[in-house]
Every structure is written in structure tokens, then in C-alpha cells.
Image 1 (cartoon, rainbow, N blue to C red):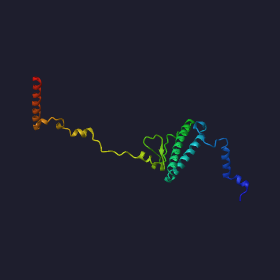
Image 2 (image 1 turned 135 degrees about the vertical axis):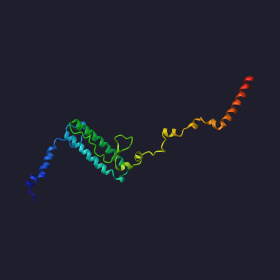
Image 3 (image 1 turned 90 degrees about the horizontal axis):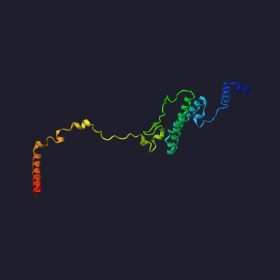
Length: 190
């Protein structure tokens, strides 16, 4: 068994002591607003902490046996953390740090439903009732014909240019014309 003086000289002991001394005066809890942080290294640390939380929650939300309400709450919490992460990334840019917004890492398999901006569904949340329907693509009905396809079958018969060729219409017109003359003569004589 090592003596206390030997333990104090070990590398792990010295590293731990440096860590505790370096953390003096730094906040242990993440600020509510990113704008309250004025140190770039702290902002990077809080951003990394949020990423760790999100990855742990995404791992947990894969379990469909958690129950609908728990899954919905976890999905809401993940989206809230992603929104907070964007705030920290903007703050890091303001403090002169790297632009993490340009680097689009994988979305951790979160999918945005059509019509929902910046709200993603993760893991088992995609299979919830009401959410599943958002991802279904609408079934297409029969294909509509284009104008060119419709005009292809239109000919003189459609416009009635050859109606007089068969002779039936001429007989009907002659009968209608005689009736109209008879009515006109009767009206004129009365």
C-alpha cells in the first residue's frame, strides 16, 4: 500500500488538483440564457454538455416500450435542447469562436415532418399515433393527362364540321325551318 505522500505525487492526483483549482470561480450550472456567458471556453463547454444530453436522450427514446407520454416528453425535451444548442452556437460566434452552425453533423436520425419547421421526431416518436401519418406520402391518383394528350384526339368531328355529311342533320334542319316559317306566318297574320 502506498503512503499518503506517494499518493499525492501521482499524476492522477496532480491532474485532479489542477482541475479543481481551475474550476474555482466558474459556474457549475449552465446559464439559462446563452447571452449571460461571456467566456468562449465556457460557451463551448455548455454546448458540448447539451450535445451529450441530446445524444443520451436519443439513445433512450429508441425504446418503444416507454409509453406514449414519456416518448412525447422526451422528444419535446430533445427539440428544446437542440434549440438551446443553436443559441449557444450563435453566442460562440459572437464571442469570436468557430462557426458550428455551418457544420451540419448528422441529425441523429431525427426527421422533420412536412410543415413542421425545426421540430424533429426521434426514434420511437416517429411511430406514435398522429405522427406516423405526418410522414406518409399522399397517394397519387390516376395520372392527369397533359394538354397535348387531350388535344391529340380532337378533330373536325369534335367541332361539328362534318355533321352535314351524313344527311340526317339536313332533314332535321329542314323540318325545323318549316315549323319556324309556319309559326312566323301565323304570328304575322294574327
